[in-house]
Length: 210
Ligand SMILES: [Zn+2]
Ligand SMILES: [Zn+2]
Image (cartoon, rainbow, N blue to C red; front, side, top):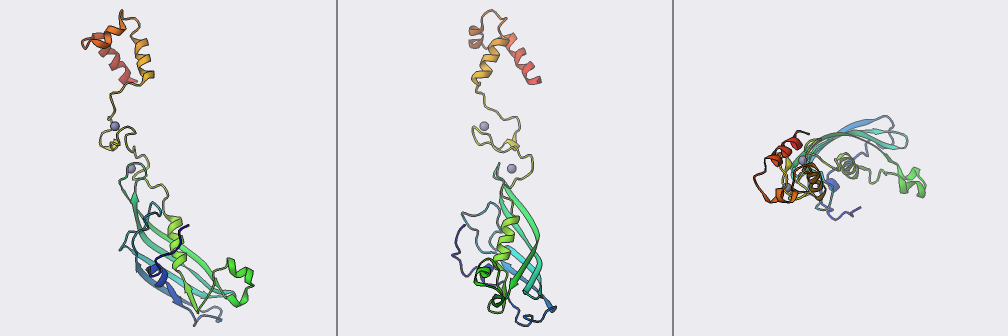
């Protein structure tokens, strides 16, 4: 979606691992481990992101296979964002598997190269893989809890703070219903003006019981 502008992000520069010692030696393997510090959040990016300064741990096994270097391991980090309903802070810990085959370019046709992840400069570059993996795992619509009541649609009040919160504005449909309930009283229009109507307070009590 967005193009890379931050070429000195640790994700771009610190997750390239030399694997010249494994190249062509089928069956040989080695474990790599590296922790990077997350760069600043992408302002227009996903709801859940790794906050600046948070660590991203990458641990992977590099294995030499016929087609190239097979990498499999885990990415562990911590995401932060806002509840999509009430804007409260939301956190998400992830520990996800990564899995990629970095293919020897010389064994591929030009067409195959376009779709493949390549073993270039004797290195495996786990940066794009790690970034994409975190992006896929991140909640797109984070919630502080599954039944978050969100904000009042009329004033933005946090419903969590007072579930009874409501506005004393009578919906036109409700006003009509109230009229029907008061049908047997002699004069409905006067009832609205008078604050001392014994019948109307009883009606209100009944409505709350439903
Ligand atoms: Zn919430
Ligand atoms: Zn409100």
